[in-house]
Length: 126
Image: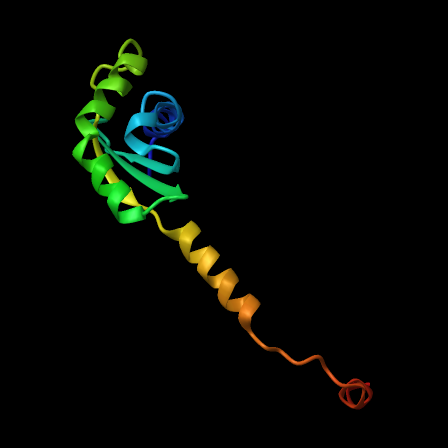
């Protein structure tokens, strides 16, 4: 159960990281769209677990690139929220594949060959 303080910092970090990926992180992510899905922060506010999702990109390669440059992302985050927090949290990124899974399921469902009910079946049900 997160405290109100944790929730407040989670929302702040989620918002700021989203803007960082749009602006300062453009050279890092290129044309890919990065969505910060959720941020969970530890009770001591020292570690932020960040779930990210990608569109228009090779997920694994981009995820590895973000992990390699997380110190730079933490620096950008510190420049933005350094005045309002005591400690800039360590960033731990997790790949959230729920959007890719939803897209995959949508494709599977659209490929199903479901026959239309016949008139005889409609009359039997009534």
